[in-house]
Length: 285
Image (cartoon, rainbow, N blue to C red; front, side):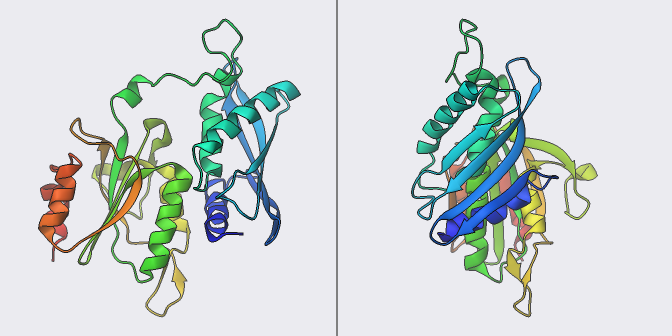
């Protein structure tokens, strides 16, 4: 299997960490991998509908589409087939990036619209209109990473996490300063308590929960002796809805700057200039 697929499997195991949520059914260098996700989504009646999604990731994945099968004790075979067909249509838009997590989230968000009764105004294939919350702008968080000893590995892993979680943003380097700007929709963000992170007042965070789980539980860096270790010194500097002047990030990018002025201009270009003096300048040593 390709390295991005291997890394995605590791990330998915951390994301779907509840009892029975995740299982790798088989794995082969020539045949790829088969994995299963057990989840729930809102059905037409409003009740949670249990779903079993099985993904076959061929050896060429993610350059090619995965195979997908869907089953549920509350859906007919025809309904499962219809959802699968729509899911594969969505998958075309994710190529050539790892996509399993995005596809699971898409089913969770769209199942009731896909199965809505004819004449209800939301027939099969109809995606939900943007909510008022989404129209007001995405939610963002600015994190400070203390250091990266294994920079190449760390950067590759952060890229993969962002892709797997459907997040956009920037990983910014300027001298010893390492900043991570993440952006996602409100329905992917919730308040959590995290006593290990240096946080805003009351330690309540509005951050992509799945990302912090990965950041805290995965061995993404190495310690002073070269052994793999977890990130324990990340700090959340700011979190809120994106300000009105922010130019939405369309992708996740890694950028390096040679001066503080260049880094300032990056924040200004993104419409986040107010964050720079309040949260970034204090990091300069």
